[in-house]
Length: 278
Image (cartoon, rainbow, N blue to C red; front, side):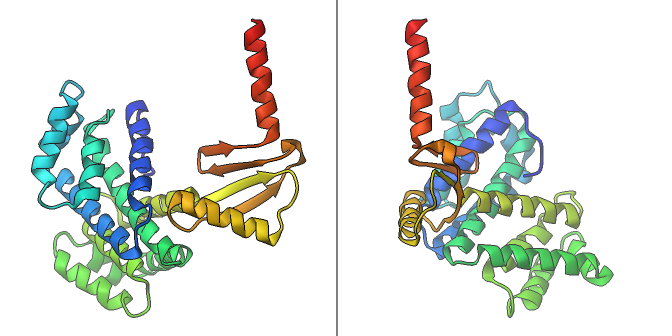
């Protein structure tokens, strides 16, 4: 989320997102949406129990004991993929027990982002989500109705009534969860957190490609096919021509770089040579 995590939690967030990447690979929009719902449910349980959060994030506690605890708590309510993510999260190190809920919530939002992407709707969902946030902020009555404590069934029914006929199911799902899980945030701050997580998922599915010369349409389509197969869901490819790469292809997904350029291999050989001489 937008929260600034400490060192251990920052690394664990990165590892948790990699777990999500592996889980959604090859899923359908429906199964990815189910994963979202299960992760949201897990976040709600964690938000409601500080004792559970502390037990999971206690650095002095054995990882195996944490995994056992999580399995006992969530084993009957989560399917295999969701449980695998949560048990792996339990084995990671965290700077603060308070970091656990926003991280699991971010994974849930990103899972729904993947569902939207698999359905070819991720850009549309982001546009819809922005429109909904603006509509709520500009209407005192609607904002009051959706921020009243409790009344979760009423708020969910209102969201469904207002959105289900013209908005995607992904948007309905995310807004329904948001209005019922503000956890002390203003509704505007909650929308910002959700925007951040959706953007993070989109950026993870955009391949920034550097090549020495422009690609033909056929080459570009082949690259999209290969990268989509590697990621396990559709990706968008942005191609940048950089003569200095000499040859090959450099691909970046977010902060992950897959570099196969000749210039990189030459630089690597040079570093190895300097090391050998040293």
